[in-house]
Length: 155
Image (cartoon, rainbow, N blue to C red; front, side, top):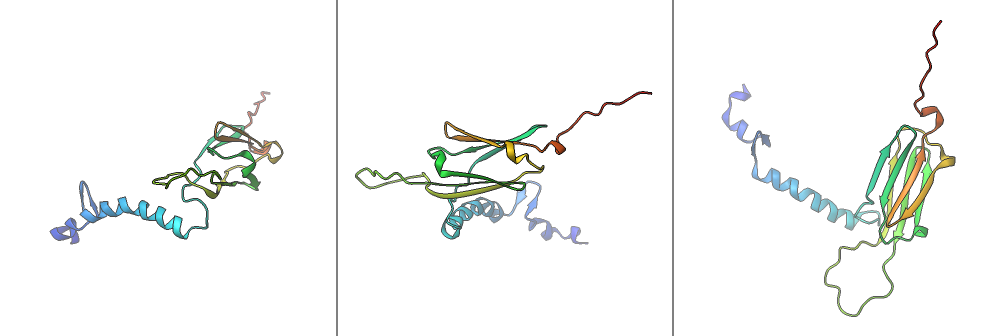
């Protein structure tokens, strides 16, 4: 019966190509206000998240994180069970130039990022390397979770 009421259809938030004017505006503004509020009431960590790339092979996970301008000694990497935790602090440069800062998109402060891995890790063989602003973490899968080919015997 409701499908026969013409006014109901025009007030649907998404109806094919027709949308209420404020629905699309809300979708555009939500991320902006989310970033603003994260910066104001967050846990003190940077509002700009640590950017990650996670790749899986049969033998391991490779996690790459962008950490430009970060000294490796200011980066803390921990494996807590099946959760990889990256945290650290990017410090502001001590020597400031004369004049007034007009505009800056550079972020300083602490950050923390956790990634739950879907398979157990061989914690004894985890490695991390830092080069050109990217840290690469190699996390070998536990032997029991790696795929194995099973030989079929014939009689």
